[in-house]
Length: 611
Image 1: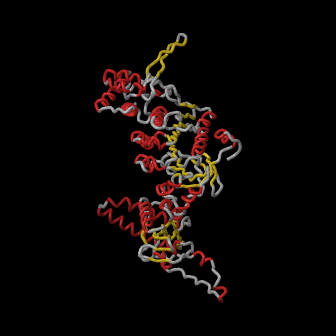
Image 2: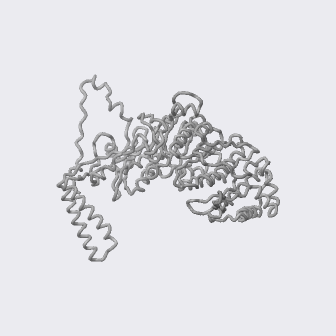
Image 3: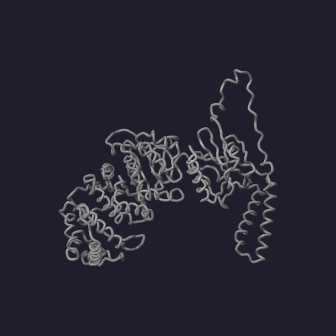
């Protein structure tokens, strides 16, 4: 569209001349805000001690949606400027008519030649241009010439190049094309600044009202998911913050949450508030708790507290099997591998190691135990029919088959692999590690269930028990009712990353729990363990929401670099007080003060009053 008036730069206003030596000696706002100097290079600027590179957006996808350029700001320190010029309706109609004629001629020519590959996009373009012209003629729409310019800032050239690559990749992923303003960087910077001075007016694209609206930054300073849990108030606006980890696309791609903070920053308090209020809305939660930080909440709300102590059976059978309701089968092979890992880990604690032959025989023994009970991958094989007599009436009701225990497995190994059976004795009932040699007695029917492992040795038995419990929770809780929104909290999750097998299991759960309606909430005071572990990074990659509270000074830079925090968010974490948090949920970020009602505060801390 020919719009010659856009190519003319706006007349620059001359600054008012200062009169007299007194006026000339008084600094004004320009003197205070101006940098030490500006150096213009071919493709970037040095403004004082900062570096800057300016881009113009030159290409857009055929269809745009609200928040089109919102992802751009995730690259770091980015300033953007949108210049919109209304096009006279007469000019717009004439140009659209010419466009319709051009496309129509090309469409007719391709139909005659039999060039069918181009017919569909040409017809779509023809109809779109026709509809737009009709809306403009009826006064229902308008045309705009739009110039979009943005500047990326950094403290040095290396950081500038890295942030620019991130910005280019984010835009390219949305079919948006941008160009560096080579030899026009100073004009670009003047265009980005909030002065209304478009010095790149010769670079523009045509938008209708709907497309122009999509450019507006619709990201709000407040976070309020429709079915969210109130966590506290926004420290900037004072508005309540409503967070829903199960908000789903396009708000959140997955429901998992990472909570990272130094000891005493209030992360356990925050998780208590989130899960306690979630239970009121019918969202059950299971806690794997190494510190006993959730017992008060669970007890007060009528949940189940399972305290695990050495030498006492837990009521959790690691050989328990359940139907995978999503896949409609019984995952026997996965359970075989879990049991093999459990036995191998316990044996290695005693300074021994299973040979390859013994591992094969162990797998065979597990399969034979299930086969002896008629259990196969068919979900029906998990059930027997029991006879129920009521008066003269006789009926048959399904009854879950008894699962094998570690003692059953050891008896079978006495024949197949006697040495393995001997090495298993400490993990059988009455042994030092015999807490899992039992039938399943714990029921996950309450809205809140906590497994407190704080009494166990933290060097080996505690992380081992956490792994076994998480596997059992996966079978008995996560797999059930995929349509029910639920949560599993793993506190001090860094313990899982100390051993490869446990780290692999945590990563696997982060990848698979979403499809079963479950949010995995990992809580840790050691971010370094996650950042330096391949499995930890994979867990974070599958976590769309992260809560960052007061950080250890030694880890703050690492946290800021990993999550690409802007300087303002990094400064907030450096100064954050107890109970204050930075919540990043998808594309939104908010700083908040976690608040509990007087009753909640009394339950969680024993104190009366508000927080």
